[in-house]
Image 1 (cartoon, rainbow, N blue to C red):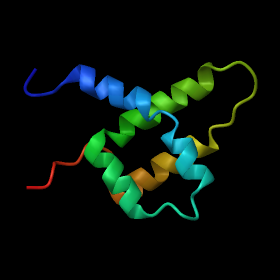
Image 2 (cartoon, one colour; image 1 turned 30 degrees about the vertical axis):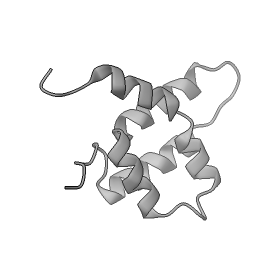
Image 3 (tube, rainbow, N blue to C red; image 1 turned 120 degrees about the horizontal axis):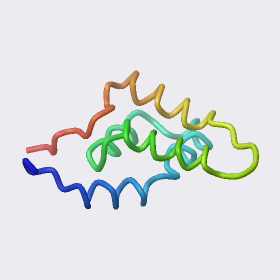
Length: 87
């Protein structure tokens, strides 16, 4: 698959699916570096989609403010895709 490990990506997305909510709840203490470090581990755009799907799939009323805030920050920093590993 051209060096892309699908299983690894899925495992990381599932493990981190609550990160957008965690970042949002701690937004006063979460800096740009946290987003950049996250982008070295996985694709934040995909994490946003998984987190949003998880929120929408729950019964009851769940707002998506955390996911909206998260993707806005991700896009403003230009880290939607997984960053290349440093040399």
